[in-house]
Image (tube, rainbow, N blue to C red; front, side, top):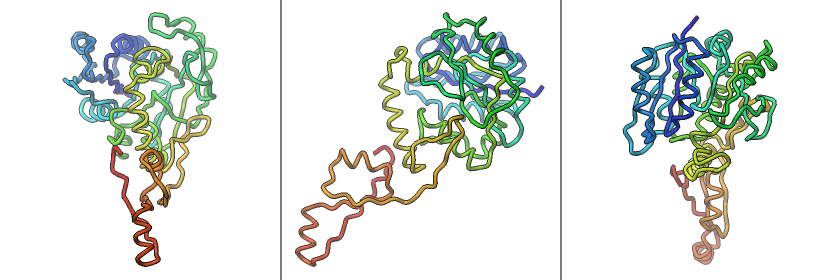
Length: 323
């Protein structure tokens, strides 16, 4: 069996990281490499990693000393390029628990030019959809009903795959770096996955979501719900808003996909707007969608109109990152 390098960054997420790690060690081959990054944690994550590495020769670890986080966008690429020793890499969240032999099922479908995802089973926290299964198996690792998880896996297993992509996903490392990995425009996280999925799609990669390999996904524990279930963290709200604007600037649209999570990439057009009586609030709302703004400043309009009877809009480039 081909070996996988699992890619798992984590920050102040130790309870969930331990759970994910134990699941990989229990239900997947112990010959796989597990690459973990501690992103400036203060909860003992690094100390735990160091102790585990003494017991597991296939555990590779990296520490961001901080105090500022690097984020998934940076650490995914660092782990894949600097620590991963296998030809296959799999991006795995620290709040996921794999089904038995998920690794074998993934490898059965993986070849060059493909991206293969396991199917998610999740608690009832987010809207349902045909690409996943909603099953209340616990909201925390200590509540996880593994016996019921195994029964769900048996119940929902089928041999065919569907055409979509979501974490956890596996790819050949060369294919990953052929599209230059994650775009650091989306530091520290949020929309980085939609961006790279779009680039996979445009480069002709095939998406395969298998239905005989699963994860139980607690969802959003390292970011959105880090302050508690259902409580959007301030950090997540800022990052999500900023990176949605960056996504629109880059792609000319919000992230789009079909019901099975296959990316939909629309043509991008050079859009210009002429805005009268513009203010900063309106400018902030419209700016990501446009390449160039022409803003009619009333006093200048009157001046030019009075002098030459012709009005000339003033072009202002508002594409500066971070606006």
